[in-house]
Length: 539
Image 1 (cartoon, rainbow, N blue to C red):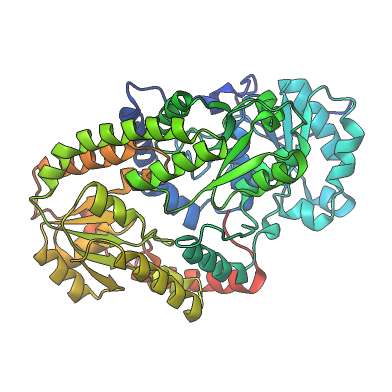
Image 2 (spheres, rainbow, N blue to C red):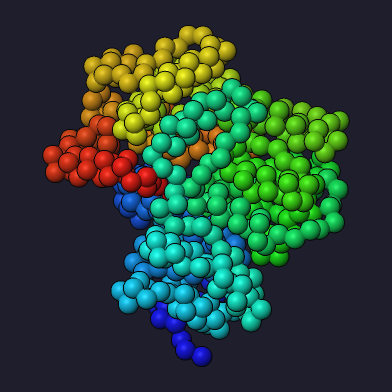
């Protein structure tokens, strides 16, 4: 049989297991810190490198699909496109320090683009199986193979009886991404989801969403349902707090009498096939396309994890809802009560330390979750004087004024339900930020705000990038870890007269971390103009 021309790693004998090896360290919190250190080491900037790479670098829909494949034991991606696509997608924003070592590509060249690459894909599937003997081959088309109109479904149907492994096709072409108009719809969905848990939304074009949906549609099979069992969706083993959440949720559910059937997508091919054996799917609020398919096809009930299900009370309510869906109200209530008391005991000393200081929150998060403030105010009991939110990124993405007004209205509505005493500043000026910094003891920065703010205020910002994303986890422990992390930051001597090089650079504020250079600004403006005109986007 003719060998396909494959672009494969130099480590040709690698069986793919390296890409599924999670970092091993003593203790969950050490594992979280190790992940952050790995990201910092790779790009040598700061802890938000994966977000920066997602926004400004590895931003193809294919990236999300490849990442999900790398989470599945025994699975291997086959990129149907040019070698450059496969090369760049070895790195995922979710695990920059751990490339996908084993990745195959049909390596389309000019002749294939003119005359068609379907035979090359056919031979590529055979060759990947003969080389690696995977349990699952996931065929991922690229922009060029999609534009060529390659009939990938027919190729898979033709070869599936000859290949003793599973084959799955995912619509991963970059141009199949959501168009620019959907950004406004997404922001409307985000704002509505803060208050309305019945909100439904088709999160089109996300590689992870489409990959999970394809697994449900093409791999899962009818099963006998296991009573009081659940499938738990996760962002993956390489994201902060994965082990911490899984261990805690597994323990709490186990005490309630509930077993975990599968953690999706971080599991084996066989577990994915048997996912319909679960009685209930626990899905995240934006990625439940797979769960909706299982509901319609297999009758599997589902429950969503919403933004308001964060913090001690939010987590407790969500776990109680899970118990209720399974008819275990009494068992759930007893277990959750014990967990809340344990968390309160651990937080008592942390609260006493934090209560002696004043704080300001500085956020440049695209979809700032106002429910996170409940964690700071109600769980950690921080004396917060100011909440400063930079929404310039919404301007850059051309979110409509109507949508922005709705976001502000819903956000203020949630803030009104909280403990009064803090002031909210939207898009504060440099002078306002400087004034805020002088009126508080500490400024808590999230994601990518620290260098700009330190340049303006000359006051260090406590970087909360490490744990702020953990607040979306279904966990009581992450709240305690967040408090401990903050106490450590406060107890560490602060050097108020430091002059970091990264803080002395002149940044383009709307496009941070880009420098304020007319050549860079022109390039960014041209790129976003093309993006808005051609309906392409991020992964």
